[in-house]
Length: 320
Ligand code: UDP
Image (cartoon, rainbow, N blue to C red; front, side):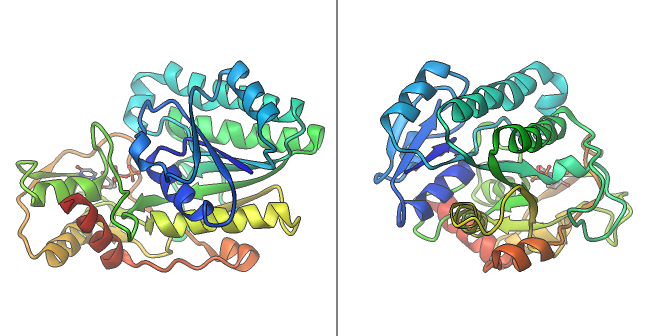
């Protein structure tokens, strides 16, 4: 049985959908940003905080949990700058409580959702895991802190972990039943699609003077289902003891500018977007593109969805 913390969120719910086909799953989620209807009906749902030691004791006593997958974090860069306490308390403090409960109940396997924000401003075109960590906002710092805690827990308490550093997750499940839904929405692809559905006046493009071919920021977009599949491979690796205590980037290895993403959305939907060009958004590096060579070589992961397919799946979900 696997405990998925944050299984009602956008990425967590995509993982649960894949995982229930091979494992019994318990989801712990406080529904602060997730939705109960996103959780696959085959999973057992417990509403609560990951920092609640009583709930954790109950779960680890009641269920034979062999691994924990942790998706429950606050993840808005801007909010982390204005409200760092929330981020350190939830992303670091509560996670530490979860990890201590695992140690006390002898649960050894942990898969952690981390982020490309740990790299800060990169100095290379393709970021691999040997690049230095220098996060430029509290969100990235909280994720890096947990990675550091995990390394210490591995050597002191024999915890086995795999860290997955996400680039830009997008897209929706092919069933059309789950997809990306944040309130407020800040992410580029859902914002464009909401505009093309008539739910927003226009799209604001943040900055046109970046050092990129068209002046707008370049990102590496990866489908939520591809990401979920990487988590399943990471789980197999931990349970079969073929890999442990590793950090992997998860991206498609292709960069697309904000303008290119908007054009692809226009093509997929056959609609024309109204765009305004505004100032840069604070904390945005010009270009973030992953080298995923390591995860491909060591876990045998290959992404299946390109940008057009990611947008098609998201459009299918938004239309519903
Ligand atoms: N972006 C934009 N307008 C928006 C939302 C995002 O121009 O309304 C840009 C943003 O500045 C970044 C890229 O789109 O360069 C992806 O942003 P998103 O918030 O989706 O993901 P992030 O890269 O911040 O994780």
